[in-house]
Image (tube, rainbow, N blue to C red):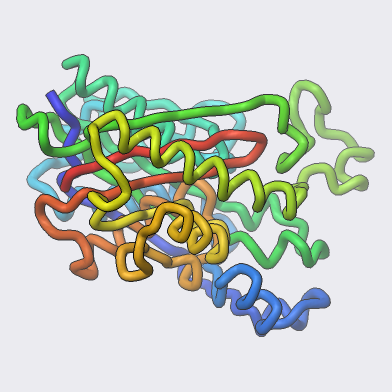
Amino acid sequence: MNAKIISTGAYLPKKILTNFDLEKMVDTSDEWITQRTGIKIRHIVEDGESTSDLAYKAALDALKGSDLSPSDIELIVVATVTPDQPLPATALFVQEKLGAYNAFGFDINAACSGFMYALSVANAYIKAGMVKNALVIGSEVLSKIVDWTDRTTCVLFGDGAACVLLEAVEDENKGIISMVMHSDGRYTDLMRVPAPGSAKPCSEEVIEGREIYIKMKGNETFKMAVRSIASVSKEALDLVNMDFNDVDLMVSHQANKRIIESVAKRAGIDEDRVIVTIDKHANTSAASIPLALDWAYKSGRIKEGDVILLNSFGASLTWAAGVVRW
C-alpha cells in the first residue's frame, strides 16, 4: 500500500501584522525585511485562539475536499512546537473538536521539519496496513514564543495551520514514494526556546531573562540550511531513481526566500518550478510546507501525475525530504 494525498486544508488567523506595523514596534523596515527574507505579512492569533483551534479548522477544510467524515479518520498526527498544553497532546484536542473518536492521535516535535516527520510516520502506518487513512497536521502559534522586542527574530514568524489527508492506495506509483529524515543533536544551540522545561522549570528568573522566547543564530542556520536541504533532496530522489530534472514542483519549508532560491539554484530547478508563499504568512514552522502545498494545489499549480519534491530544515538540527507523485 502507498499513502496518497487525497485533499489538503489550511487556516490562517484573520489578524494580519505587516512589515509596516513592525516598523512601529522595533527598529526595522519593510525594505530590510523584504530584501532579507521575502516576508511581507504574518498572521497572528486573537486572544484565546490556540494551536488546536487552528489545526481543527485546517482539518475541516481538508475533510471538505474528500468523501471522508470525522468518524472515518483512523489517525491524527499533529506536528507543532507550540502545543496547547505540555500534556495532553494537541492531537487529542483536535480529535475532540472534530468528533473523530475512531482515531488515535499524538504530537511530533521536530521544529520546522515537524510536518515532514509527521508525514513519514503516517506514511509508515499506512504502508504497514495498520490504518487506511490519516490526517497529518502542522499547526503553530509562534507569536506566543516570539520576543517582540528582538528585531532579529520577531520579524520572521507567524501563526497558521495546514494539513493533508492521506489514504491508502494500491498503486505503487502514486502518493508518497520516498522519504528521508536526518537530525544532529550537536547543533542544539542554533535555534531553541531554553525554557520552561524539565531542565529549566518556569521561574521568575527564567521569565525575566526572556528565556521563554525563540533564540536563534541566524547566519549559521542559513548556511547549514542550504547545504542540508540540497543534500537530503538528492537522497530522496536517488531512492526512486530520479533526479532534479524529474521534479515538476519543489515545495520547501518557507523560512527565508533566499534559502529557497539558493537550494533551487544548487539543484538546477527553474524558478517556475518552485513554490514560494513566505510573503503571505512568514515562517510558520511545522505549518509552512502544508500551507505552501495547499496553496499550490488549490491555485492549480499541481496536476495529476506531477512529481512534487518536499524538503525542510528545522531547528537544532533536523532536515528531511520526500518525493510525492500526485
